[in-house]
Image 1: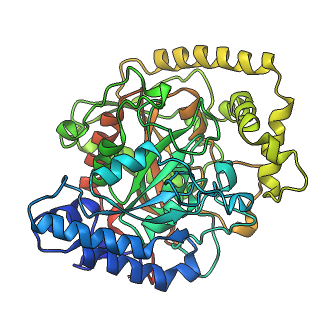
Image 2 (image 1 turned 90 degrees about the vertical axis):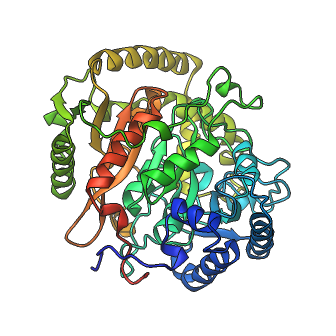
Length: 470
């Protein structure tokens, strides 16, 4: 497969930070950007099925308004006129938000999510809503009734796009949108980022408001940006973060601008590699790319160190009582009604929460506190822990086992309330993306982005595009 980097002036291929620069300099019009993206969506969407709904008419009107405002000197910010796609969990008042459920095909939002308000206030243009796993409860990206997006890195065979933010991953990878919003409860930003060759940030809980976002697990849900490079992720993260009186998890957490430290490099940083025991069961291509990433970072001046972790990453796949109980609280009334049409794999996951007792829930919360402390002690003196994002590249959909989750390397991040960045770090011989995960302590998003930016400056994996989609 052809995955060579391609450089051009077509706006669909320009990252958001370049689009912003070109629009601000009036060398590019928001109208032209939106029209190019809508034309591409019209051409590729029948195959890729990334979007639940495309707001073509409204996007055109918003682009015309942005162009007039910018030309008249009334730009509201540096991202005025930049399009964005929203995962179909994010409410827009008056619009349908299905949460990936056919049962909610007529669910009209009564509010606009805080993150959507913040983007719109910056002059950003919503292109539409992207597909998600039903109730955001699944890591492979499949959806039995609303449809599964097609991973654009293999147009011959349907492969997992990663979930639950499947449509956002496909939309950005296929250049249908420069960036998009995902949500991450156990890996749902990082998994589609990994399988679709993107950069995705899982933030610490409370960093970004969840108000107006359909919940899966209120203790674990974290919205986050998905883009083609670290710089774009940092820009969008800056727009999204900050306290929100409508979300109690954000209280007392001040915004922290990652841009001043983004380009400082990694010289002098101490980066922990995962224990050798964690390499068991991981695809050879994944491990080779992981080792190359460590070598590249070492060559940039970072010190790669070994640490003894108190847990195996797979241990956290069994720490499900919090997620299961909260998912059942939010969606159990639907899953328990046989008349409601649901994805059967999701129904089974939701109903699994019916058996979680108060004792199980509270015991898991207590175990969470102890595990956070133990991991913090193990990683003391290091700046980040590096792992693969997934144990394998995207597999074919006909090989997916719904009883097995691909979140071995991601779920612990939510349970331990850390932040993590996934970014492309290579390709298989078949041309499928591989991914590195950079994990940092809570509220150290700026450090994950700094390390990721340094790696991307030294490599070109993030510049490659899916075959036949140029």
